[in-house]
Length: 544
Image (tube, rainbow, N blue to C red; front, side, top):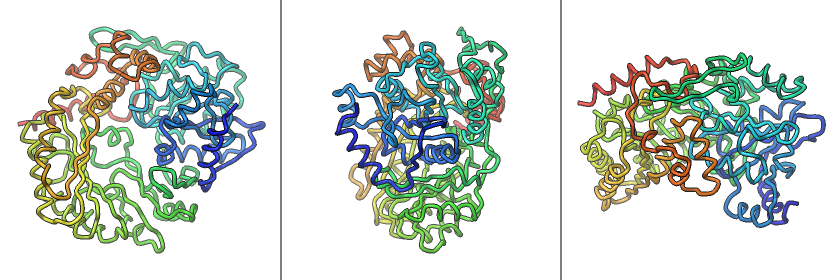
């Protein structure tokens, strides 16, 4: 039975929401949509909100939500021995027909076995029995590029944009008499990957797979041709999300720039842009919102961005701009915006060419100066360290660049956010090793020391050990599932890896060979391995 404290916490969250959907579960497919991070983070994810809206538009479906409990809730669940419940009906997750995880970040992987344990659902797919436990499915961008570390957990992985496949899958689910029949027919739906129907072996050439029972050898990523679908949009606003009281509005999907480190620029191809009329429709659908957050990886490339920003009576939040002339043209339209981000990524022209970040130092300086002149309180600059071919002079270049920005305008704060490079599948750098952690730490010290006494400049960075955990999960194979299982008992991923016999050094710091077979090679993401290798070789020739 749910404790009074947990009940009150859920009721308090729900009472502050606008747009929550409640349905009678009787006679419908009951789905619990789970985000493997806290409510505060998950409710700021447009993909999660879009799937919630889409599913609840079906008369034959009731979709509710669940999130990783925060520290206070976690303690209460453990203290009372209570099964984890959904928000809307406060039902235990194991009472639903389907549990659908939306997975966007590798560092959320350890939260998945934790949520399942709180829900009294076995972590491993092979020990869950039909009729006793719900069907577990996985979507989100992590499923696009490498679901293998989670393949021993999920029954079905959606490779591609979920709104393109969910309707087809649910129509099949309705008419299937049992899971055997469901799985047999689901294999025929393009984009659905059923891990149990593949035999995996390993050798010094990489990962090898053999399809069983007529399963397809290759899974082709599904994509939505038209992102103007009004069914896929945010429906809930809340002050308790990371973007407080904000309605998230998708403007475009995919990025035209294809930086060599960025998986988004490759797996979301081709770029699709929402029509201005549909953006206005999305905005008008939730008039209670105080602000509207425009979502897209390169908003300055949206052709009607000026028209959107000029809409009367609407306050917009733009998370980031691309440095350059287009950004300079729209800076004056950012009414009341206090914080804007741009992402130089690297401190020198040479390294920006290596990563295919097609902006110059002049672009960065001009955009930064204009933003600060417009009264922006916080100019956020995103950089990466540990990038392929990075040298000491590239780190000095970050310090020099920030100093030049500060000298050009003394107003506002300049906030650096520094992350550690992680090579991702389906990018040209998927062959490249990560930099040694000792080097990363030294370079962070160099940046902080170089900017220590500069007025109004702050430096924040990720915790390097978590970047390496991300690297292990990003390029991992099925054996990494054992590490996640081990992390139920120790949150230390290195210790869990050691206990399960996983050689972390091999996964993180080894240069891959051109012909190595990767765990994700069975996915067709619309770009060939040969094309990616050509890009990688081109990057390496720019290292001098």
